[in-house]
Amino acid sequence: MIDLEMLRRHRWTIFAATAGLAASIAVAATLAPSSNPAASLPARDKAAIEAVVREYILAHPEIIPEAIERLRDKQSADAYQRNKAALEKPFAGAWMGAEDGKIVVAMFSDYACGYCRASIADVARLVADNKDVKLVWREIPILGPGSDVAARGALAAALQGKYRDFHSRMFAAGRPDEGRVIDALKASGVDVARARTDMASPSVAAEIRNNLTLAGEIDDSGIATPTFVIGGQVLKGAVGYDALKAAVAKARKS
Image (cartoon, rainbow, N blue to C red; front, top):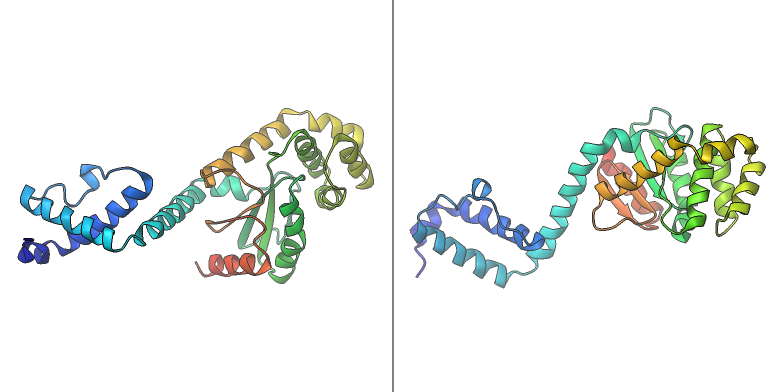
């Protein structure tokens, strides 16, 4: 029989242990002794607490998905804080909206991604409707060689102040390849000879490499396009205008 007096005395320890165990199950790990409030308890009390925790989780298995979600949210928020400066600093002209926007939306995208293309109108509306929002595009070419050449072309266009025009034309052109990239550069008024040099430059290669690293840091469950990072919130996929607007409102409050 479980000692009720022991449970009363250690009620906060039991609560913390329950939460900790749920999170540990979620990540297939155990609490370190220094962070486990039950570690220093007598063996008898510790065994009783473990029994209570086990019974509670078996009776309420729904707390495990909740623990996973909260853990991921915390990990994303921590990763955002570590990488905030890098996330929110655009490469040359690869941004739109308020130059000193209070809210920065980082969008990871790929020109071969249909969901990125579907998000263009939502993103434009978001920036138009929220005068304190700055959108920063981050190129992550993950869908093949055409994606890579398009991302390099976009960054070369950004160095000449033509990113937004190229961005729109490249998505409108369909599946990217070298010919379509050059056509979009020409139509955007870019100096193509200079752009070719920039596309092969170490700085453009470093930007793409850094963007891929950032995307993996922000969400280690897998890199996807589009991914939006808004004040520590991570939204994956073509989530739509309403979801983006709600994330901006939440970021504004915090």
